[in-house]
Image 1 (tube, each protein chain N blue to C red):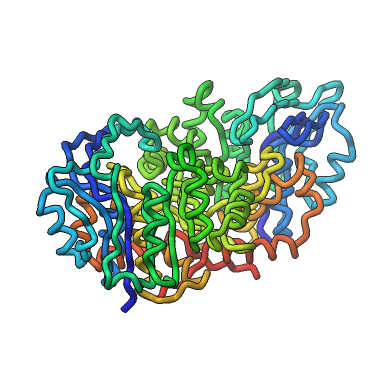
Image 2 (cartoon, chains in turn orange, yellow):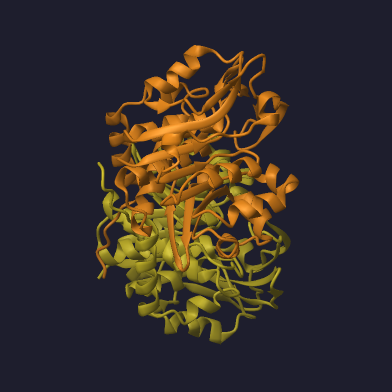
Length: 307
Length: 307
């Protein structure tokens, strides 16, 4: 059985959407990635940091989903990373209302001994130097996937480029791909980003789906058309967790299999947005995921009557 | 062999994009629809109107592509409809610089006698009362497809609703679907529009592809990721022409076959945007269309190792 190592935030979020608002609830990139990947029954561990204020039942929630949490440092007297945001009416854009780094400010990640040989490594959104530190602690993984965002492009671009040079796959959104490459065309942007290091470039377009690039090859996975998106928080992380979870489960990192991996990423992300925070991801059944895979096939597969 | 009747503008366009600008060139919804549908070697005829200033070689271009033009009225002393537009840098939005209705202002469409029994009718973008008049002249067609735009929603909504009530398929873009339905969610919008009459609703999202709705069913066709979009003019009409052309050629109006039809629509539209105006559509070969269909399959078709 392959092992998946995940680094990223485990955090409190407070979210406001047109449909309501939450107090501090469970959030963080590693949380969403871990819950999403847990649908593939693989061995996984999270490396992260929380404060003493972080509730045990949140950690239990990860454990119940078979995520190893011994790599989550609990800082005595520390406070957990907190993010608060408000989505606009179209749910495509949001304002950050508050960001409190707290224990994340001095985070030194320590990879658990039994995950140094993890075959699959997911570098969730975090400071590039933290991501680099994790990479330096693992032995020759089979596949490293990097997720990042514009904040690091704006503030720590040189460090970010060092990470980008070392990974196999990068997942970013369309605007970030344009920012990083300086090209508006996503086809051109992907080619430039490939030249920075990653063999595979995944460009997430939110409700417009996701593109997977590798040299001259390209694959597209749509987002499932939903009646209502309730809360987009964590959708990108859930997508990444589904992507790498499926690859770790199947053990096949060919381009053909990555096609299915981004379909699974889109599949799981389509659940994530149906409820606030991680709520929908907590009780997801294999049957629901299988049923939705069938919907994705009906949505995208066709047979022509001419040639 | 099925017959396809097309009504729409045959016009002069002057186009400016970030890549250059044109003088008055051949344009118009019916022109693009006709050229696109001509790739399926079906019998087709255009009902439209032009002025005496319209060059013979433009009409010859339609004839060479086996489009019957006897339904195109040439008004003595009249001037042809003229549209001029300038695209913004992202090519997703444009400003209309000039619109001269000219002979279109008093257009009374006359369906040629031998096309009154056309099985397929494409109502291209025009005044809804002109579209209605065409519908009143045909005998019980197998499939009627309507294309329209926000201009008619803004100015002649009641007339437009009368046409919408009489057609089988409507093709509009995402913003128009939201405007017509009052719903932001495209899934909800499609359901409301179905209740206005059409059994099938096609929502065009430009570079983000197109959705086909029918009751509880939905299918998605992506746009082909292109290095560069040169000129988007006519892409929506070319899409519609490919859609109905494929259906007329195969004679199968099931939902399953409409899936392939919107793939063909996307296929042909992906050529249209590669050059200014109709230039790319004029010399398109069957081999090129087949080759691009193969690209669409590689772009969208997948096989999972888990179910």
